[in-house]
Length: 66
Image (cartoon, rainbow, N blue to C red; front, side, top):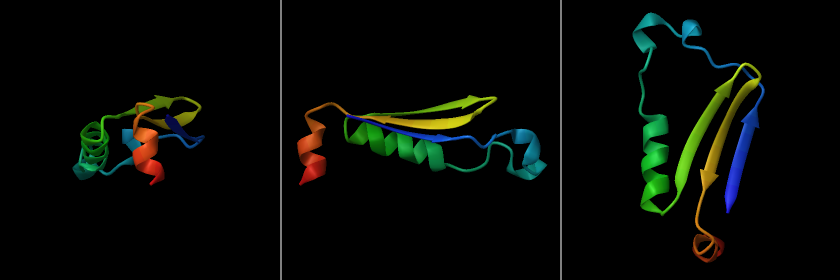
């Protein structure tokens, strides 16, 4: 099972204030939660935008549907 969220907005550290570069634990927390459920979360950043990919084994579908 795969969930892919695509956004055509650009993400660039140069737009963040200097004291916020690399700050936060949001993505790390999402990756940890995905791993705990047997899945994997990945991010892609391109000049056209960004994407979040969440992949779970097929056996996980039954757990998520309940």
